[in-house]
Length: 313
Image 1 (cartoon, helix red, strand yellow):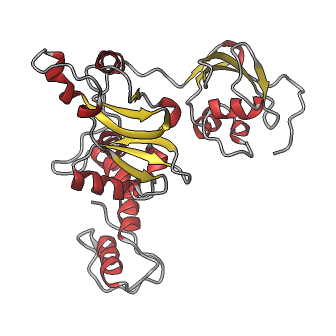
Image 2: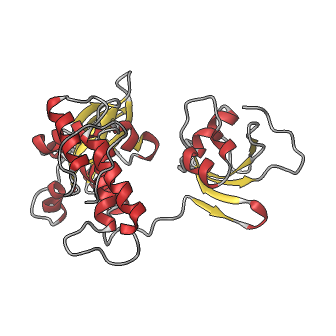
């Protein structure tokens, strides 16, 4: 680890020749509260920044025993992991694949084959009432003909965790480990279903995306076209859209996070394919390419016309 950089006025007498002075001051603050302005988290991040700035993050292989670029990124992810809530990480409600409680086992088997998931939530009438989940391993014996097909799905249903959207991601990770449950249903303030989260989703926040041999190659959320147009997945985060395309596209008064949510807000309903919606703060136009009746799935973004008036944010 590179040497820490003592701040101006630091009178610490701890030796710094080993490169651990910054780390030690952070440990002292964390354990003994000697200086509330320091934290071990900050000291570690500053050490990583200094290492990269000094050329340690170059293309040459790391020295033996040193942290690789992948390891340093994992450490950074871990340092910020506790800042996330489950709502930041969860699969949104609109993307949940679930099965109705009264469905047949044949319907369940077909859904497992279609979705490629190992766990399927089970709901009663609407997604706001998720009564449990079914793990594919509990269905294997039935699919293989070793166990009779049940009349209902009830014998297969297990209980997931039910957690508030404000819960910390680190707290949920600990609870999942303790209770050996790998799926959590995220509830909003009215106890409705906001989304769901798996143990894998949480681990991926630290180690990065984990694809297996059954996962499809992920499609790009934002694809540039000719003449300044863009094609976009409606799930694209407005933050990413603002960074990649136009920062004004991130300006919206309502509490929405995705392009699909923005299209819904602009139309005041779920827009139909072929509709073109104008975003007044940026001048960009959102053309709806595809919708399933419940949500927009694909959009084309048209840039503002030259000389067009743009509404002040």
